[in-house]
Amino acid sequence: MQKVDLPLMCSPRYPAAPNRRLVLLAYECLCTFEFGIAVEAFGRADELTGEPLYALSVASVEEGTFGAQGGVRLMVDGGLELLEDAGTIVIPGWRSIHEPASDRLMAALQKAHHNGTRIVSICAGSFVLAATGLLDGKRATAHWNSTDALAKKFPDVQVEHGMIYVDEGNIITSAGGAAGVDVCLHLIRRDYGIEVANRTARRMVTPPLREGNQAQLIRQPVPRQQTKTLAPLLDDLRGHLNTPLVIDQLAAQAGMSRRTFLRRFHDATGTTPGEWMLNVRLEKACALLENGTLSIDRVAEQAGFGSPETLRHHFRQRLGMTPTMWRKESAERSLPG
Image (cartoon, rainbow, N blue to C red; front, side):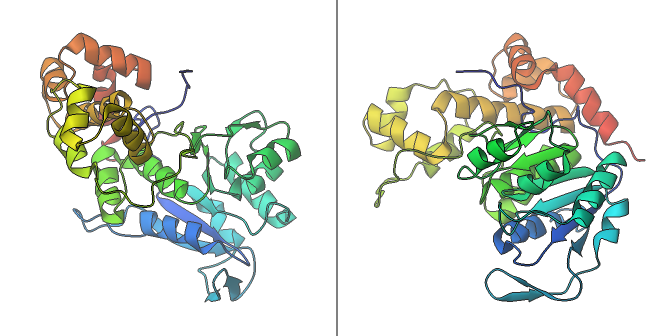
C-alpha cells in the first residue's frame, strides 16, 4: 500500500485558529445537503459545555432571499462582507461544476485567504476554489464523478481522485455527500481535539474517524439483505484493545467464513481489520495523551500497543511526531489566548 503523506486524525501540529468566526457560504440553487451538514457540525452547541464551537453566520452571493435545492427559500445574515473577518469560510458545494463563480466571490475568497482565513470546500466547492487560483500547486479533491473534470479544467491543481478529503493547511477540500461530514469532523479535531470531535460525531450518529485517504467508493455492491451485523463485534474490539487480532476467531465470532468476514468488514469500515484496529488504538492513545498524565508506558499499554517502542513507531509513521510531542503541542493548544 502506498503511503500517503496526509494529516491523520487530530493534528496538534495545526494550532487551533484563534478566530472562531465561521462563515458558511450560500448561493442560488444551494446544495442543501452539504449546507445542512456544515450547519449541524459547526452550528450546534457542544453537549458537554453547552457552548457553540464556532460563531456561525451565513453569507450569500445573492442579495435578499434566494432559492435552494428542494424548494427551500433562504434569508441569510449578510453578503460577502461577512467573509472579511472570518476565521474559517466553508463553501458547501456549488450549483454546477460548469457554472463559474462571480468575480466578486472569487475576489472575496482571495482576499480572505491572503489575510490568513482558512477555507474549506465540500464537493463541487473545489471548483470555486480552483477558479480563484488558490489551489494551484496544491492537492485537492471533489466528488468522484467530477475529479476528472476538475483535473482537466484546472491542470495546475494536483487532483487526488480517490480521497474523501485533502488537508493542505489553510485550504481543505473534500469529496461529495457524506464526505462533508468527515471533513467537518476533521476540522473540529484540528481545533478542539479528539474528544470534542467524538462527541460531535455521536450527536450526528456517524463514525468519528475516517482517514482522508480512504477511498470514496466501495466497489463491491452492498448486499440487499445482511442478516448479520458487525456492530457488536466492533464494539467488543474497541473494549479490548489489548486482544490480538486473529481473523479466523473473529470470523467465527461473527458467524461467517473467513472470506465473507473480510468482505463484510471492508464493506462496513472501508478498510482491513488490522488498519481499523490501528486507527482505534491511535485514537485512544491520542485521547489519553491529551487528557491525562499517564506515562508513555501506561498509554501504550492502555491503548493496546503493548510497548512504548511500538507506540512511538506508529506515531512517527502515521502522525509524523512522537507521543511526547503530541502531548506537548496539545497542552499548548489548550492554553487560553
